[in-house]
Every structure is written in structure tokens, then in C-alpha cells.
Length: 230
Ligand SMILES: [Zn+2]
Image (cartoon, rainbow, N blue to C red; front, side, top):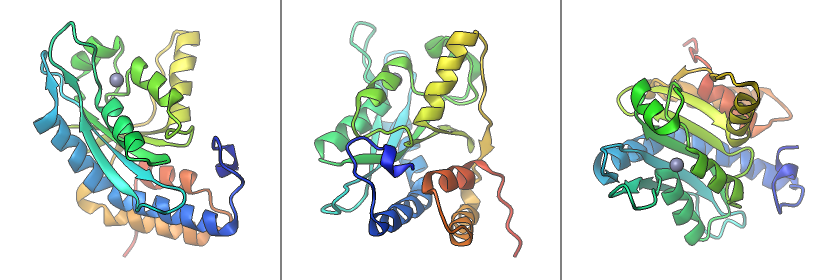
């Protein structure tokens, strides 16, 4: 179901399905590295005339396996008010595209969680910094981003995060526009210091379920409060 909805992809054969589950397992394992890269981008590479620093990372794959999966890091760049903004999300999507990757399984975006700083750039307050309107449009138009691409938005100084698929994110903003009400997705405490628990949760769920939707399991593993018994 999930795979068949992907643009330009044929229905997967069982081998491909297996590969996909492995891709998502590796994506879950890569999250602490991806968070580090996104925070590093925000702290060391971002350039903003108004000190608004955002970093991002993307986990990109090539369908034919001719290149191994890769994590690409990036940062925002806005040297002055008159230069068009170039967001961290745009940076990683452009790099992945230029490097010939086919699909971004997931992204991490690290930015401020200060409500007033978020309101100043987004005209709304969200628990974590979401992709802006221009980035959402770019994601919509990118062949690397699908409705299932997982978007992890995380604070710079804490593990407070929100987990959306790109489809979820669009829905939140569309409903908000129509209803005029802010809709807040749940906030997860990623607890990166104990990440092995989430990897174990992903493996436990995929092994226990015969017909696995790796996107759904990944979202569960990332957004749930995970406490496994020893
Ligand atoms: Zn943006």
C-alpha cells in the first residue's frame, strides 16, 4: 500500500519489501547521528543575519542500490534581509538530488523551540520548528520527498521532538488553514542517550507483525514512549 503509492515506482516485489524494511531499520539506527549532524549544522554552519540558525539532515537511498544509503547534512543561509532565504531543508534536498539519490526516507530538522522565535518566522507557535511554507512547497515538488517521508523536528538543546510524515504535516497545515485553529501534533521525548531501546522496539514490532508497514512502525518506534522490560 505504502510503496505502491510512491510516485514513479512499480509495485514492490517481496525482495524490495524486505530491503525497504531494512532501510527503515537503518534509518531508525541513524537518528542519533542525524540529530548530531542537524544540530552541528545549526550551530556551526548556519548563517543568518538575524541569528536564526537551523540545521537539517536527510537519509537518502538509491532504489537500485548502486550507491549505499547516505546521511546528508545542511544548514540555513540568509546573509541579509534582501537575499532570498535558503533553508536547511532546501540545502539537504538539493544535495541529495544533485548526488543522484532517488528517495529521502526521513529528515531531521533542528531548530529553536522558543515559542516567540518560532512565531517570528512562522506566524504561529509550534512545539518544535516545522518546515516553512516555502520548504513545504519545495518538498511537494521534489521527487525525493514522498507523502511517507518522515520529518523529525527537534529542539537544539533538548530531545523534545515531533514526528510527522510529510503527509501528516501537510494535513496539519491544511486543516489549520480551513478551520482557523492551531492543531498540535504530540511531542515526543526522544531520549537520544538511550536510543537502543527504540531500535529494539522497531525490531520487536517488525518481527512480531507479519504484514509490516515500515513507515508506520518507524513512526511508532519514534513517537511512542518506549520502556522495554529487561
Ligand atoms: Zn524553510
